[in-house]
Each structure stands twice: as structure tokens, then as C-alpha cells.
Image (cartoon, rainbow over all chains, first blue to last red; front, side, top):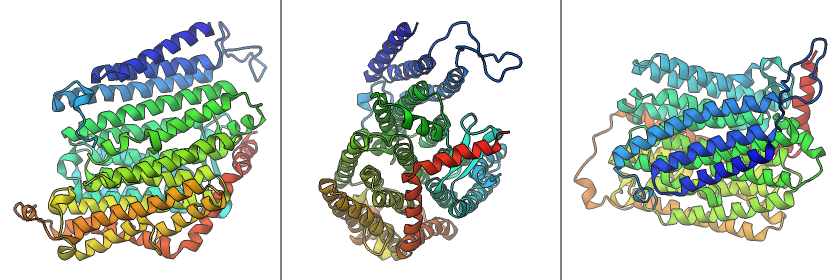
Length: 115
Length: 505
């Protein structure tokens, strides 16, 4: 399972960076979305994938027995998803406002503040 | 139980919530802004006093013992940073009363300012690396919204670059945290440091160190990654610029200090060498960028970049004296840089422009403002006896002692070029006579009460600069103690983990 996930994550990162390198600001936001999803999947995968072994502590013991799935990365991913959702919704609104004000979808036309 | 660790985070959060409740009442929001930031300043001073007396303080959230729960840790560096946050927050809150204006206040300027301060204070005090990510995001979301307050064209263009690069940096940070967790199985920074020290080096540690360096390097605006800063910092209302200039990049610098003294201190020959050259190029690029500019706030923005180089230089040399210099430099820089931005705000309020070409004659019309500009400007350039002289002196002395002559030469050269930039502003804004077209369209007069509100924080910060400069000995001792803590990570680890065992049943 891990090799497959590694390939999927790699493709997601590559696609995200490709989209972010385009000049259109809409594609930029799509790139950001893919990027945050790729990061979330990576965290999920780094802790190792364990199938059908919930981290439940049997009665009378203080720690679960044998190999169990690590719940912490999933909690991290949940937090990261919520944060990314908030930030990306801001980015979408920003892009819309930017288009309304600058009247351009092209990053090359947004150079007034650069030099 | 040490409530003073949590209070610098809770007070701004609470103040933000209260000002959200009074969304329609302008006077109440303004009152809460001043009261909340004053409360932050007072509790942060209390925190620094206790940390200075008792050593590293730890507070475990929900009484979960150390590696399992989230711990708030206040060592001297963290406490110093929180005090600086309090000073800047209070000064900017006073300044905003006069300059932000009804329109921006109605769209939630004050709640966002409180949220930003809470994020900054949280980042300085947390002892958990994922929690650090969360505070970074709190700070970023607030800064995004503050940056586009007013929705002007330049703000939109600046914001797109700012948002994109900061999001990329967050993602790199998040990925690095995930990979680190996969390697050591813990998120508590003290516990990570302990376990990494026992891990045999498999190359992955260096990869992770580089990922953290890139992520925090973007936040701190270090050499190849600083382009978002001069593109965006001069666009928002000036109070927002001043707040950003003082605090945001320094959170990145703080994170670099924390991570590269506590966690990734195994192979300084590799990581700190890269930091060293990064620092040199950061100084040089920033100051050359500033030399080419003729807009007040853009010059200052490029100078943020060049000054960041000095702080990272202190970290990269990694000798006790150099770390002292880095900490001292942060203390000096935050106050001076915010002060310069506030002065640019007063100039803008009086004449309605930031372009050096259309400004002039301030020495004749507002001599007190000229004095208030000269103090931080000469301090930034490193004139004795102001704070910048001692900060630069310590860093450069450390560079010579470490025999890093190339970077030290750059640091000296950059000091000279900084002086050139400051003199340029002085000559154009204060010394030369008013350009003819500048007189045609006089800006609306400022009433005296507003003027006082703008002048008091500027004068206060100038006094802080003088205080640091004339009173360098005790502050040097403070920086020395904090550098001692940074270079002995065992003390940090022990304070966090052993304290946890006491609490555990």
C-alpha cells in the first residue's frame, strides 16, 4: 500500500507545482488546493499504514497490544484539513476580488508592486 | 501552576472576541484595543520577570504529562519575544487609533489585530511543533485579512504573492512535521530533540533540517526566498505595515533559532554553513534593493530583509557570542523597524504620499519629527551610542572571532550602505526644501489630538531605542542568559520532560 501512496503523493505534488507555475491566478489556486491535499496524504502515509487494527486498549491493560494504527497522524490531518479549508476559501475569495479590481487573470499583469 | 505563560495568548484572544461582540461600537473596539494590548504588555513583563528569576517555565495544557499533551514553554528567548510583541502591539494600537480610519475599523481591523498578536505570542510560547504550525496559521490568516483591508489594486497584487508564498511555506513546514513524526514518533520539541540525539544519522535528519530551513526561511524572508516581502509590505495601511514589519518575519527568525539550536544541532558543519551564506546574501540583496528604491516604505521593507541577515548570521556562526548578538539584534531590530514605519505613517498623514521625490521640508516644518526619525534611523545604521551599534558590534565581533571574514566584511559593508539609505531618506524628506508641486495640494490638516496619538508611540519607541543603547549592559546580560539556555538544550529538555514526570501520578 505504501508504494502506491508514495506514487500518488508524488503525482499530486508534481501536478500542484505545475499548476502553480502557470500564469493564471485561477490555476494558481487549484495548485494550492492540490498542494495542501498532497501534504495531508503524506502525513497520513508517513506513520505507516496498518489495516484493520484500531488502537483500542483491551480491558485491564494500559496500552494496546501488537501493531495498531497510529491515531495521532489522523488527528493531525484533520486539523490540517480544517486549516487548509479556511485558508483556501480565503484564497478563492481573494482571487475573485483581485480579478474584479485588477481586471486580469494573468500574473504577469500584476507587476505594479514589484519594482 | 504558572498562569503567566498562558495569559499572553489568552488576553489577545479574549480581547479579539470582545471586540467582535462590540462589532458596531467603534468606541468600545478602540477601548478594548488599547486595554487588551496594555494587558498583553503587562503580563509579558511579568512572564519575563519570572522566567529571569526561576529559569524555564512549563505549563502542560489540561495537565497531560509532557510528551503526550501540548506544553507551553517559556524560556528566556520566548519571554523576550513576547515582551517585544507586547511593546509593539501597544504602540501600534495607539497609533492605529489615529490613522486606521472609520472604514477599516468597520471591517474588523481591531479584532484581526488581536488575533494576529495571539498567533504571534502563541508561536513564541509553544513547546509542540505541530502546535507551532497551528499558531503560524492563526497568525497568517489574520495577516492575510489585514493585508487586503481596503481592497486597493496594489494591495490585491501584493496579497496574491504574499498569500501564495506563505501557503507554500506552510505546506513545506507541515510536510516536514509529518516526516519528522514518522521518524521519531513524537511532536513535543523537547522529546524530538532527545530522540534525534540517540538516532544514528541516516541522512534523513539533514533533509528534514533543510525543509525546516526553507519553510522558516520563507517566513523570515531570507535570501533566495524574500521576494514576497518587498512586493507586499508597502501596500496596506501603515499601522498594518508597522505591525508586520515588527513581528511577522521575526516569528520566522525565532523559529529558526528554536529549531536549529534545540533540534537540528547535530551537524552544524552542514546546516549552519548554508545558513551562514544565506545570511550574507540576505544582507547584501536587501540593502542593494533598498538603495535602488525611492519610496519611503519600500526602502524600509528592503531593509527588513537586510537586517534579517544579521540575525541569521548570529545563529549561523553558532558560537556563544554570536547567539548573544542574534538575540540582541532581534530586540533592537523589532523596536527600531516598527518605529521607522510609524514615522513614515506620520509623514504620509501630513503630506499624503510616500514618494521621496514629492516630499521635503519636514526639518523646517516639523523639527521634532526629524529628531524622532533620526534616532531609529541612525540606530538602524549602527551609530553609537544607539541600540544598533551594540547589536552590530556583538555580531561582527563574533564573526571575527569565528574567523568568518567574508561574511563579516559583508556585514560591515551592509552597515555602511544602510547608513546611505537612511541619509537618502533624511536628505529627501527632511532636509531638502518642499518641491514646488508639493505645495499645490495641501493635505487635510491634522488636529492636535490625532497628532499626539501618532507622536506618543513613536516617541515611546524612540525612548526604548535610547534605553537599549544607553543601558546595554543589563540587556546584554539578559541576551547572554538566553543564549546560554539556547546553547544548552539539555536544560530545555529537562525542564519540559522532568516537570511532566512530577505531574504524572
